[in-house]
Length: 284
Image (cartoon, rainbow, N blue to C red; front, side, top):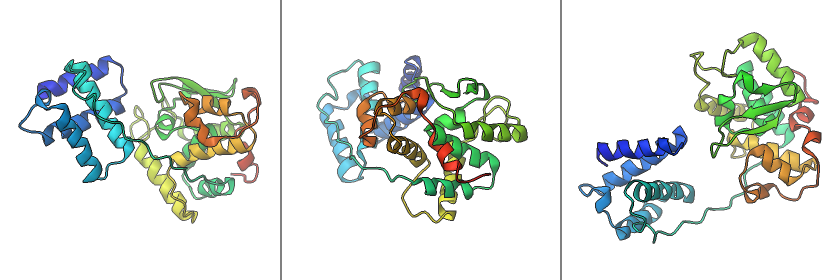
């Protein structure tokens, strides 16, 4: 894609208040798409050519449904919003996502992961992710001011879908955060990177988690996001209503949360973070 089109594409995404992560993702998809069809320019590419391109990615490149849907979203924005050509990609079918159940860590496995991390900052952020059901991108961007110890809540700003929400601040987590704060004295971001004005990178958290999983001898195929899945599952098993789990996770649709089905009713004010139950078995 020509530099002028690329700049316009990125500018339009920013004007629509898309997140920096989505802008980067869409831009990469569109640049690779345009490079594939050179010397044709994007406005010259037909709907049938785009359809064949998608089929090529599925059959020859083994792309997964999530990546294909992201690509189609990016192309739809390019043609509909930028080029004003709404009919160009109308015929492209949306690939169905695979409905795989995530591997869930048991409370004992969660505890063993925490015990396998010596660094206080790294252990604290993993505990925070599990205790509040955070995405790793949300956890690294939590600021000191987002911790509301009076209401025992954590304010998550501009999460997925650019939406704010509140989630649980565990009793044990508050004590751990106070211990952490005394040692590190974060200024703005709760978990700072090497530069005090930047947050800890998501990649570092992912690496720390995988090392801890390996050290703990856990053979399940889990990622940092598995702590969030485990948070929801452990709440479900404790009898928390699905509606409250949906609110805590920040899911726009209850269908997303239905992976953790069959729950009983309970008010949000009575919800106890699963971290408190786990840490009741272990003192750090």
